[in-house]
Length: 347
Image 1 (cartoon, rainbow, N blue to C red):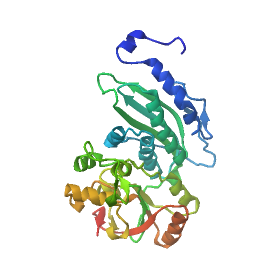
Image 2: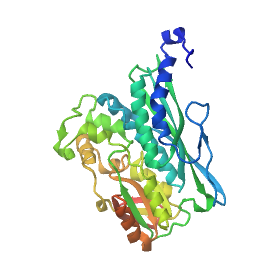
Image 3: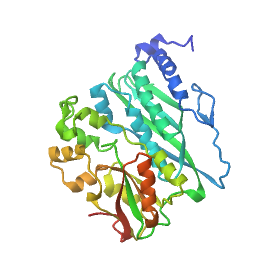
Image 4: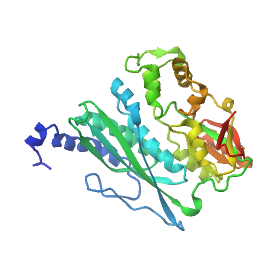
C-alpha cells in the first residue's frame, strides 16, 4: 500500500492513508484477541476462522449483531472513546450466550465523518478488551469515512459476532416448568439501552458530566453513564461447566424486563419477578426522579440493575448462586416460573 494515495479522493474528504495508519495502530490490539481457530492476520478481504467441532454431534452456528446507540453521544461529549467498544461487543456476545453458544469471533464496523487514526485506535481498544472478556477473536472489521453525511467528529460503531453450540445443548426454554427459579445477574448500570430517554431527561448536552455527585455515590454523571455493559459470557460458561442446568436465559436490553423476559418463556408459563429482591442502582432512581417517569416505564425501558436473567431448576439454585458469588458475580434469586400467559409479572 506504499504507493496508494489519491489527491482527488482526499480533496473530496476521504484520506485513504489515514485508513492505513489506523490499521497499523490497531493491528497489535487485534492480534491480542486471537484464539485457537484464527487463520491469517489483519488485512485480508475476509476473516478466517476454523472452529474446533470435535466432540460435537451437530454443531450449530449462532450469530448476533448490534450497535451502541446514542450512548455514543456521551463518549463524544466527554472525548472518551476507549470503553464504548466494550459495549458493542457486549451487546452481541451477551445475546449469543443466551442460546448456550460460545462466541468464536467478532467483526466491527466504524463509520466516521473523518478518519482520526488515534481516535479509531481508542475505539478499537475497547472492542479488543470486550473480545478478551468474552474469549472471542476480533478477526476483521471496516472503518469508513462519510464526509458530507456525518460531521467530522461524529462516528457510529456496530458489530457482528458468531458463536457455536452443539444442537443438543442449545438453551431455548423448551424444558421450562413451573417452580423453576429465576436468578438475576447484576448489571453495571444503564448498559447500552434507553439512552435517548436518558439524554433527554438528564439534558446531557448541557449537564455537568465530570463533577462527583452524592446521588451517584461519589461518581460523576458522565462516568456513571459511560460505564461499559457487563459481559456475561464467562459467567454462563462457568455455570455450564459446573453442571448447572440452565433452562432459559434472557439478556435485558432495550425494552427492559417487560419486553425481554417473555422472550425466554414458553406458552403457558410466566416469569414472576419480585422487584424488591435486587438493588436498583442509583442512576435509575435519578433518571426516574428527574424525568418524573413511572416505574412501569422504567422497567419497560431499562435493566434496572439486572443485566441477565437465568431460569434453573429449584434444587440447583443454591449451588448456582454459590458458584456465581465465588466467581465475582452479583447474583440474586429474583423470582420463579409460574403458570400463566402473562410472560412476565413484576410484583
